[in-house]
Length: 271
Image (cartoon, rainbow, N blue to C red; front, top):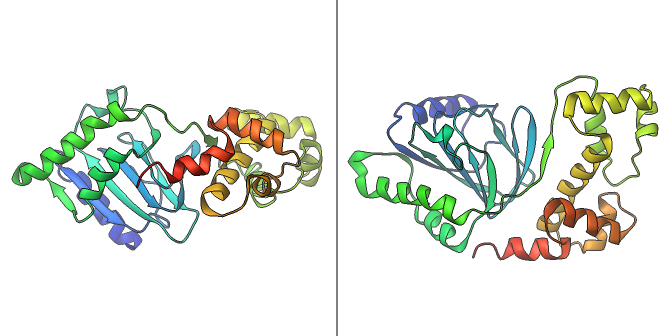
């Protein structure tokens, strides 16, 4: 893994040649600060479960998925597990920011076709431009195929905040996700009235306490379904549900599929 200084130097290197594609293979961006690129970036998680952090939201990024990050969007990638590998591609195109697909952040499954294309680049590293025309053309075609094969974005995004009043509350929710968490008791624990804490969620996150708690529980559930061998029932209880039916219905509503299907489909998303 690169040191912070090496990472910042590489960041400058990536943007130093606007006309080229850039390919990198690395273990993680785990300890790196928020940063941005002038180019559209594709990050493919080959192993592990990750979270994409932006100034306003946290996105769940499971293995065998890729995230498309538009130009000039501050971000960082945090990994949930020690075993992880990522491939990063930075595409050369000044007009991507206004493109309906490349100008929007999205997380998509890696199809069999895309898996093979990305696998072909595993030994590549650095800039690819006119001097390496075949590699450049390959990366350009890889980019152009993305809008045609990426139709269903993973829907979960958790709003975040740096507000010092709310940060300890959110940390408590994360650390006690398996427990019964209610607005009233949580407010008393942190010295708020229920109305004040409810208002704080709306002001800082633009969603209610109940909506935030559901999203946080579902993110935890997806990680457990992908990283452990726990049954759906065990996962439901591990993220604070005492009703399997309620958990399954909420998961289906927010994720778009049943929890019993989620792990299986993600495992089959790519060879």
